[in-house]
Length: 494
Ligand code: GAP
Image (cartoon, rainbow, N blue to C red; front, top):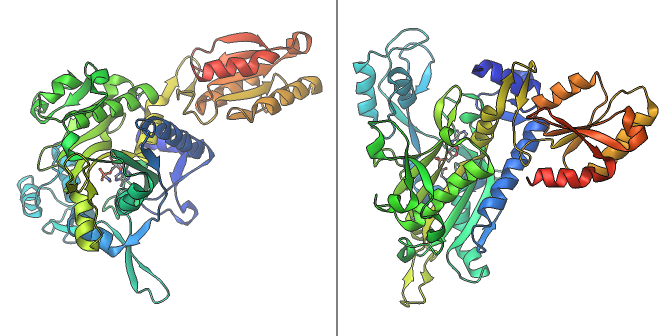
């Protein structure tokens, strides 16, 4: 059953996943808080991300860095000049909207990378007027999306909240390269906050002003771009692609990694496209038909990219939505930092004896958007059961298991259930519940995605066994209490 954004938002809030920040003061547009379940889900996602991407190469590492950065970082990266969005304002009232979004909503056509003048012309051509007061719009202008910060007692140190985590690894590159034995490819990852003063924050956590990114910056010698030592292992893997040339047909085309090379994409890039798809399909269990890799053309690509595919997931209310991207940023950032800071970013190519600035391939994932997508895909209204079932996988779901005594007024049952809970709560995310009927408890557990419910009943007192219930099939099996830990272990890694 299709659920509206309003219903979904109300479910996410009621269950403690995510809701607007500062709500008791009326909320603050573009800022969200994760409750106890949302935080667990987000952390589980981050753990899965770390395990997958940081093990792609033994020379990939995670770092943690400051979120407020020197003004010159963004002079060097180009963000001060180029990190802008087109804004359209009503000539009569206070209505303000991102111009490209206004047009996209009205025409259902993407229009990234179009100049303010062209956007103004398109708005006039389609006769778009203010939805609030029906007045004409002013001409489209652009605004920088970064949040300036004035640090220090005299507020004299102009700095910015970083708009992407990426700049932190770039300014850390030279030091880490020296410490980490001067080897390329070198991966530096950050899971952390980014800040953007979005013109029209909307759609829950999909467009916020403060959000979390998981980004891996892979520094490599550009000479190897047409190779990857493991390419053979992925060459027959089929990617779900929508290349620029496929757009007219509008259909995803399955192409093997080897076929994509014929579309002038380098091996090093395609290998990582495969890894991105494997992460979403195999690790997160996003259904293949809801996933696609969308190639951006020259006008749409971010200002720093040579090759750019968006990672997209089909969301109930919004259709295919950008969740992340694979970006070949060349030496754009390191060269910029070398130029502005005067610190040498070059490293030695042992083969040629020449020095060069490493290039960067960036795997960029929006954590909040990925978590939203997981919830969207997992949310199922089960008409037979009469309740929502959140079909999150064992590794992602906030609680893997729950322990119930069948009834709460039988002390021996309660004691046995509590003992079982105490013996497993340090091994698996688990909760104990003895309130209301067991049927109601199963329904509550389904709604927050609990994968297995274990019930201690009257027979347990005789035979030391319990029932274990599978959330997705509702099937119940009887197992010995002594086997619970091992059974959960094999179910977790199934
Ligand atoms: N370092 C590259 C970079 O930041 P981006 O496409 O601007 O690239 C990467 O952002 C991802 O961050 C997006 O694909 C999206 O998932 C997430 N993201 C960007 N802006 C966001 C926002 N306002 N709210 C939530 N997530 C956002």
